[in-house]
Image 1 (tube, rainbow, N blue to C red):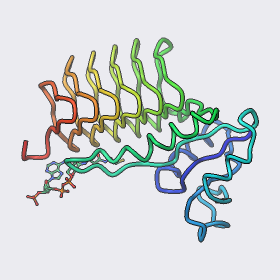
Image 2 (image 1 turned 90 degrees about the vertical axis):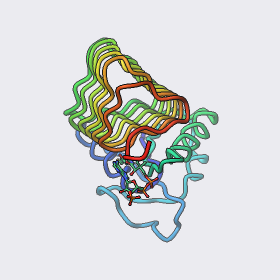
Image 3 (image 1 turned 60 degrees about the vertical axis):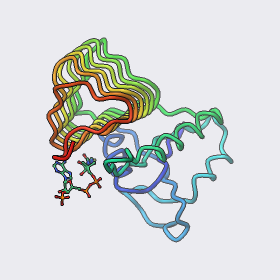
Length: 210
Ligand SMILES: CC(C)(COP(=O)(O)OP(=O)(O)OC[C@H]1O[C@@H](n2cnc3c(N)ncnc32)[C@H](O)[C@@H]1OP(=O)(O)O)[C@@H](O)C(=O)NCCC(=O)NCCS
């Protein structure tokens, strides 16, 4: 069974590093930019566009989502990452959980398909992490935390105990979500924000102007 990383951007480098930390060497990275074929990223060759996957049997290959996101106040930037995951899962391909060797994951935490837990992240007991979620470098999900599908908990963000993050929400780097707070689906939390009250679906918190 070989593993292929989709999209050769900055996030792909972090995904490759997490895989290598566990002794898994991806076979290839895909990218839609044909001019990059032949380059390497993290020591792994870029071999062609995403659609090359379609020539491969679903039982012979697993995939990793290498697409990151850039959030603004009005857009989490996560749609592309979600679409990539949904397109290939609908076609029968699987995305295994990827966890860097230095991540700490409680024995009873539950992680959905394609969840990614990067270097130094900590996921505490009874946490539930959805499909295609990105728990980025050194982020913390405390006990009983819930993170909905496709959400991104950016580097160094801290979800205190019992926090709930909705599907497709973006929690910015270094943000702190206080105990028991809910952040709605698709909401955006600015880097460095301290969030003490619930955030509505599609809402925005932090960043000096809310
Ligand atoms: C809050 C955020 C979403 C705003 O993005 P944006 O809509 O593109 O806004 P801009 O960058 O144009 O900034 C608009 C204003 O808010 C300020 N600002 C931006 N982010 C801020 C933050 N996190 N905290 C405080 N002020 C912030 C800017 O300085 C600017 O101020 P000004 O109008 O006085 O010059 C974004 O800055 C952010 O925090 N994103 C999270 C990034 C992240 O964690 N990425 C993880 C990558 S792995």
